[in-house]
Image (tube, rainbow, N blue to C red; front, top):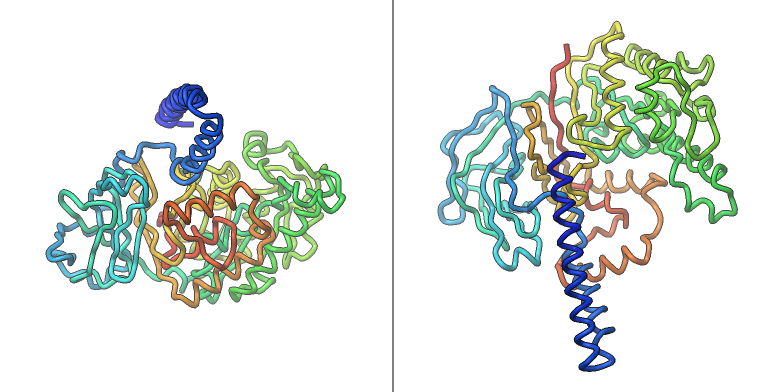
Length: 460
């Protein structure tokens, strides 16, 4: 955990204690006025918390996002006149375009999500926003684009950053998925239009299987069933996007063990929950033999050897993996570390590494706002490496197909717990939030967008 996050958590907990103390005093005083008043105030306080204070933001909305862009990025001034964006240079040939600006929430923007309308698009930000942000204009007609803030104001100088990329979906692509569904969440739009895409999934995804215990299974049996189901998902769901089973590989390592494996490369780390320690249990449908098939040991050395074999078999020009500085999930960080180690040992060298973020350190709602709209850049407060960005568009048809691909994943199925369902009803009624009809899991809102977003790093 970063020091900044520790400080914010300390302030948050202190403020929470003060609010609770004041609430207790208010309840004590209200009980002197009427017996029914304290229960009413408790209910109203809980409703207010669920509507406006339940977001998990581990930063102040007034902090500036901080991004560095590569030297070949075109950065030019822009301004708004008559509700239209005017840019001081032509942007032909640039596929990824960002607008840097300062947003300040109005008083309503502390209770409703502030957003900016960009023609037919919309991009949302934190309640109470007051700092530098980056809108994603990729795929929009930037010249004379209608731009209208809601529940916020645009202030200060504007700057457009534009970047050129090849269409990486036209190259041989290998997606590194730490778990089943990571490939679909990050890149369904790209692999579904790539003629030579392959997907390798590193883990079974067997932990947190409490839902399967309702079938009368004990903890270990439930985890084994979940691991089998998610391993099957990793091989079967990509077919919906046109990636055949002969181009999908399941390695069968265990959830939340990759980091420990990396620190002790020759030590086997079995499942935390399924009581299994042989990765071959879910490899029988793989289209190729792998080094780890010999002993089935869940070791880092076997994982690296497996990845080397996969890279040399599919010979990708582009690798797609989690962003090691942005996506904090330990399996995601370890997956990219493993990929880079495998590249160092492989006789085949890809040209490009595309990085994605399915999770964030600081904000579990990003991308914010309703499904179907654009992806603004995520919160970053310590500048990342100055990578180019690539943000290709998804048509409405591709977005629907992506939602259906997510629906095939067992881990994204199932009804919401009652507490979350009540929270959504309250936020819909009082805070104007909306969720898609395609699925109840939060990823149906976050991942099904008009953009996908990748950071581009050359390899070699």
